[in-house]
Length: 215
Image 1: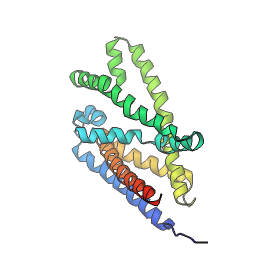
Image 2: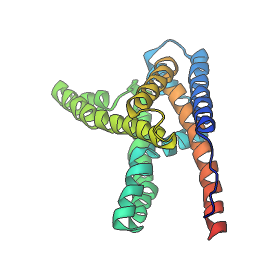
Image 3: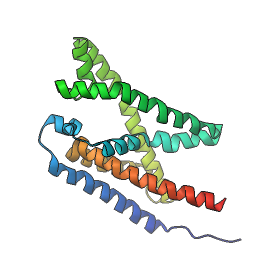
Image 4: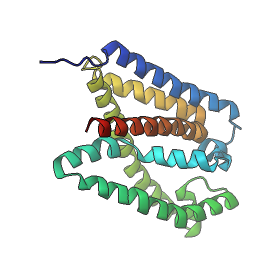
């Protein structure tokens, strides 16, 4: 038998720590540009450029649902699952963003909206509609965020060979996200997403090259 040595657990932990440290640094550094307003915290005073916006949107969709969930589903059901994911990500999301998102952005900039609930409350002149939409959004958002945190803890546990318990990984990731969102707001979140997307795309391309080369 031939044994192929992989990265040591110490090396894996070192990489994880460096990665989390970089994420924190980016999020905390963005606080230097904070203008002290709610609009700046929630929508970065609408000053995010097209590159950061594109990278941030891409990174936002590269979540546990896409990376772990879709991969697991493809393992069970077949590679066609990736075609379904790609069509929704490449067609449905950009279409909705272009025909709906850009118009809502323009209205938000004109009237100062920072949430969807604000727009629909004023559009229909109904506090009930705004409250209902708020409840729906929170109900959908909370489990989605929790799934991402859970997947992070599971991933850290697996890549470290069980050296870090799942709950510890979850806790550390929650704290890191809390810190850069609290101090950086939307600007910090967008910059962190951009950084993570670039990392994802670079290593994704390298992985594709290695797999194709081995095959």
